[in-house]
Structures are given as C-alpha cells and as structure tokens.
Image (cartoon, rainbow, N blue to C red; front, side, top):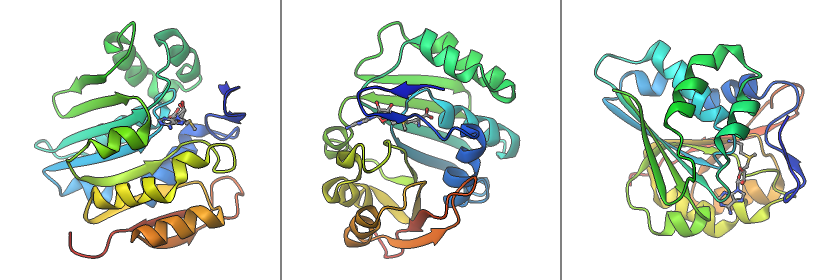
Length: 219
Ligand SMILES: C[S@@+](CC[C@H](N)C(=O)[O-])C[C@H]1O[C@@H](n2cnc3c(N)ncnc32)[C@H](O)[C@@H]1O
C-alpha cells in the first residue's frame, strides 16, 4: 500500500484501489457508456501516482471499445514514480497483470517532460511531469472526463483550488464530466463556482459521499 510521506496520505483507499477506481472514476464519469459511441475520447487525471487508475481504465477500455475508437489518457504528475515502485504497487492486482507489464515495458528510466506511450493501437497514455496547474495553464486540447485524484483535500489543497477547478472547466468539452472521491465542502464549492453542475453520490466502501458532475453549458 503506497503512502506519501510528503503529503501524509495513501495513494488510494485501503480496501481496494482498483474497485474504487471503477466506482468513483469510471462510474462517476459515466464510463464505459460515454466512450463506446465516441470515435475519440480524452481522459484527464490529476495525479498519475502508481498508474493504477490508468491501468484499470485501459483494462475496461479494451473490454468495451469499438474497433475504431481511440482513447487518450493524459495524467498530470509532479513526482513521477520509478518503474520498480510502480511494479511493486501494481503487482497486488492480478486482474491488471497484462496492463502492468505493458506499462513497465515502455516506462522511461527517468520520466520527465511529457512521457508519451502508445499502450496499443487504440490507446495513448501521456504523463505530463510537473505541477498540475502550471501544466494545465499551458494546455489547450479539451477533455471529456476528469479523474480528480490529488490526495485528500485536507492534505493537498492546491490540487483542489478554485484556480485549478476553473482551468479544468475551461478545458472540458461540452457535456464533459468529472469525478472524485472527495466530498469536502470547499471542493464542492470550488467546482460549482468554476461552472460545473455538481452531484453527490454514495462513496466507495462505506464512504458517505463522493462528487461527480458535468459541464452542461455549450463550450
Ligand atoms: C492519490 S495520488 C494519485 C493516485 C493515482 N491516480 C494512482 O492511480 O495511483 C496523488 C498524486 O498527486 C501527485 N501530486 C500532488 N500534488 C501535485 C501537483 N501539484 N501537481 C501534480 N501532481 C501532484 C502526487 O505526487 C501523487 O502521485
């Protein structure tokens, strides 16, 4: 179970991070349904960490995609992990064994800048190394879904700031969505002030609430 001493938080819930990913990030973004009919779909993630969300998403994408669909998963990460640490963390889940091996075969020795990996002919992973807000200020392509996964808001408020939520909203396609396990009042208020329609849903593994929602106005 990877733990960040810098932020004083675990990388995912202690029950089962892979199942949490399905409950929070996929279902909260209405996936796989929304990507099935799209010719191309772009997911943004705040915090690549061990790559668990990316690998579980890749697994579900392979099981449900159309032969002509294309997925780009773009994750913003300040402290990219070393291959051996990713390997150790992801080895816990035999369900994503093939995906873990596929990622590790391509993962650079010293990740920096934009790490672009063609996981397969229909799936591109881009890990943007650096501070998420700074990277997003320089970003221009829109996203269809957001995974907000930047540690607990009480431990890392910068990943939930109004500036960052506003930038996410600007970079969200019309009808695009976000999802997070976070339920803190200031996170919900920042998302609403940024422009998102925000919904509360039951959280994973007994957590009372999580947040998800959409950009409903035309872009
Ligand atoms: C909860 S973990 C992400 C877990 C990850 N999604 C996974 O599947 O393993 C949060 C991540 O956010 C990163 N992070 C923290 N502050 C950041 C910032 N300002 N910009 C970019 N990444 C940041 C941390 O280094 C950490 O990897």
